[in-house]
Image 1: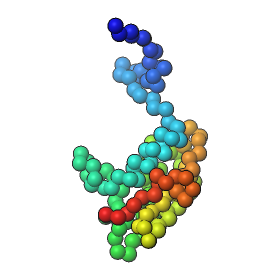
Image 2: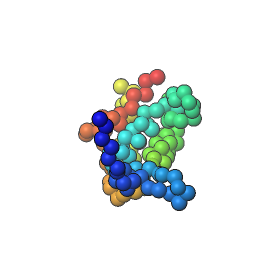
Image 3: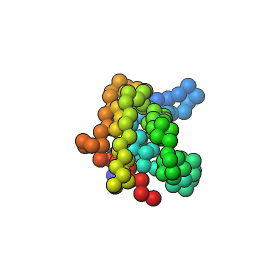
Image 4: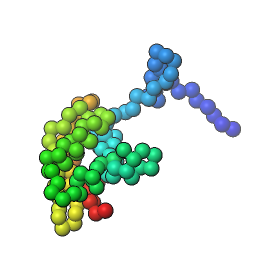
Length: 134
């Protein structure tokens, strides 16, 4: 026998809009934003079959002859700052290892809820080391 329990909308993180629809009010915290940024940085442009515009332009802008380092930094800055939950970036450093072709993304950001997200791949955030081998 199934037991049903009535849960108030507010307890689910949902809110009712003026037009009668229900909207998700996601719990935005540092772990959620960190995961969203990680997914964004690990997706190569053209990789997603449903929309080839999604992803980072590694083949188009990063893995080219004579890359524009300032433009590459701006690509990462824009990708991180456009992530839902990020208010602003306070620091961003890209660390490239030519031996392994790995790119480490180190940054600090202030989130909309006031939390500070620090990512340092040289310490413990190995998830933010991106292999640039095609």
